[in-house]
Length: 129
Image (cartoon, rainbow, N blue to C red):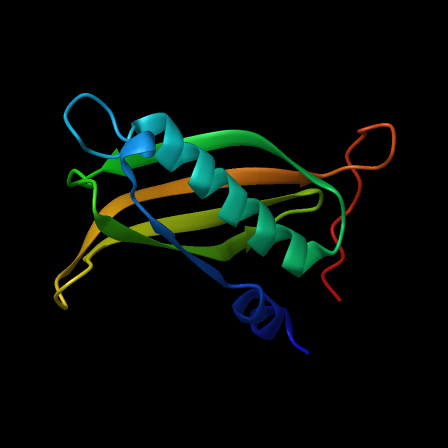
């Protein structure tokens, strides 16, 4: 399998319902909850690619484009977009979807950097072949 095929095969999509216990005082998804969901799906996609222990080391620019109201669905899609020697970048798109119509909008987009580590949490190479 080529590197590009492995990157595509690692793409991961998770759908979450936005319930009141995940919202803020404006009845929209709490930003910290969204970031937690995004980190989780980035980790899953990265692990599916590297098949190594990974840790998140940074979250680059994250754009919160539209609010995500309670009673909607969030589709989080993580794609491995860049591979380094010990690190990778994973872009996460969050699409908000109305439960009772086909209306969908890109709500959040961010890029996570994950590093492969050994048992002592030292960086190790990510296999690319």
